[in-house]
Amino acid sequence: MDADMSDQLDLTQASPARIYNDFLGGKSAFEIDRQAAQAVVRTAPDARRVAIENFLFAGRTGRWAAERLRALDPHHPAQLLDIGCGIVDDLPPDMPRVEDQVHAVDADAVVVGVDNDPVVLAHARGLRQPGYGGVLPGDATDLDAIFNSPALRDVVDVERPMAVILAAVLHFVAEPDRVINDLRNWLAPGSILAISHATTTKTAAARVNSMTRAYENATDRIFFRPEEEIRSLVDGWSLIEPPGLVDVADWGRPAGHDGHRGEKVRVVGLVAELPSSTPALFASS
Ligand SMILES: C[S@@+](CC[C@H](N)C(=O)[O-])C[C@H]1O[C@@H](n2cnc3c(N)ncnc32)[C@H](O)[C@@H]1O
Image (cartoon, rainbow, N blue to C red; front, side):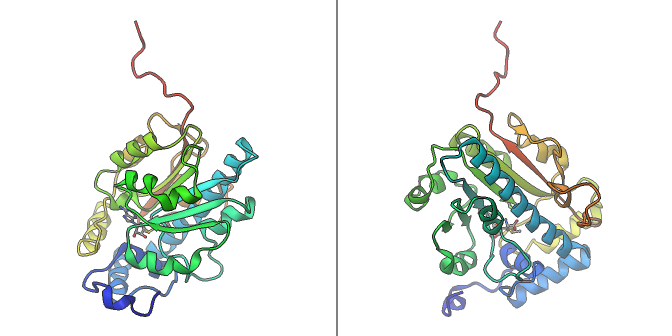
């Protein structure tokens, strides 16, 4: 991060990006973020392990999507938009980032991160390198600004299919269905969407309530949602099944793997594809 960045930061509020960075073993959290992270862990002792599983889910889905896009269009590198990409430059070496996973299968793929947290953007300045699109400022609730941005259009052809990753982001958004509807209008058929989201389903209500309280004074509130509501975000898309909507630890992993499923707090994930034509809602008479 820039040396002078701390002068511009409001350190009276924890930020989800820095709390999550602390969970992943990064070094970007401030005292207020560490306190918020500890409050979450007191409520949900396995929160750090679930965060790591979520991070690995994002990478696996990115890799899967890059392979799929490249197979469908061998002449063009895959393009991926990682919205709410988080702080990724200071993680332990055994934590493969989305772009690492993607470039393992498509060295020419373009991966563009987007985030609305100034600390994420400050950290990302050093990450511009060939084949990597960098990180742009943007908010998931204003996709028009993201998709119209000349900086994005410099590196991504928005007319071609792409993958969009929204890992652990939509639970910080009050109206996620609006985000997905807007996204659908922007994406070319054949595009791929990966979502992960904290769920009330099989998470004890007392835990949901105390985790929700732990984020109340942060820059973004957290909204746990039932699995049906998360699955319904991709109504009209082709849900990739198996595995469908599952614990993030289980997506893209063989049965019997040793990943950690949330015991105290669950985060679930899915991948869906935008079909080439949208089925009519009502059959014509
Ligand atoms: C829990 S972190 C997840 C990081 C990364 N996607 C992952 O799964 O490893 C959530 C990230 O989403 C960002 N975020 C939250 N709300 C956002 C919004 N409305 N638009 C863009 N980014 C957002 C936060 O700043 C943070 O970096």
